[in-house]
Length: 382
Image (cartoon, rainbow, N blue to C red; front, side, top):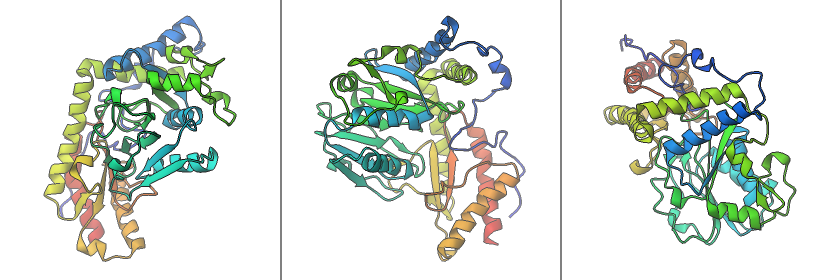
């Protein structure tokens, strides 16, 4: 097969950190508040601006709290788990590596006595009808390492007794968030909006705040996880008074991404751009016999962390070790050619490819990548 001639202008298809927004240059950081305290008036204003623009774009309800927290999405999820779980039983949903990580923390770190696990293999969802909403429920909205998302929020009842806690780090800004169905939502700057690492976002519903103010966990809380003082929410966290020192360089970058999103049309435009990227891959998969989506059910296929499996009979006849090597070689070839970086499947996932389709990726670059995937596979098969 002849090598394609057209290359993606931006070869960054990593599922995190993700591609910067189109047109990004380091010049957008020139007004970063460097050398100044984040607790100064200008520092707090910058942090508050990130929160306010986030609220505006995502349509977060006025009575929900939205704040910047340490340690990326991981820190945000851990804050929620350590602060909220244990008041009642919890259903933990896991169908990929990050969800399984939260299960491990609940069982082995928090030692929760009433912890029910609903698991599914890579490519599938657990049976959502089995979820008990008398209990708290923790799940990943989009399985970043499996490319499997929940199709919507219809399975979450309005009259739930427990809290709905969603790790939405590769979903927010790319998939609709039904806020009334959710009590805790977390994500990180370095996913859908292509920001820099180490900062997380945490959204709390009034029901989650009520839990925080009425429940004291049986375990000691590290300082980084503490959201209440004398039984009341530390509201400053959600106004830009962060728990630890944030990078004002990263804050400036996050703000740039949010301003770009508003300029192009807000959430609707972001969703459309991500869906356009997914459509490019879907059309290619439909015409390509050697590949398929890892997600079995079409409605659950992620439009951000798009995971693919190789289904060619030749490939499937290989040993498991050779299958892994073959899939890795495709990603390596494209990396070496400067065509696509970081598209190998996650280390814990089945061998295959994982291509980021969030809004910061141009559909024209995704279109240019498809012939290269065919070319790389042909090289491996030879």
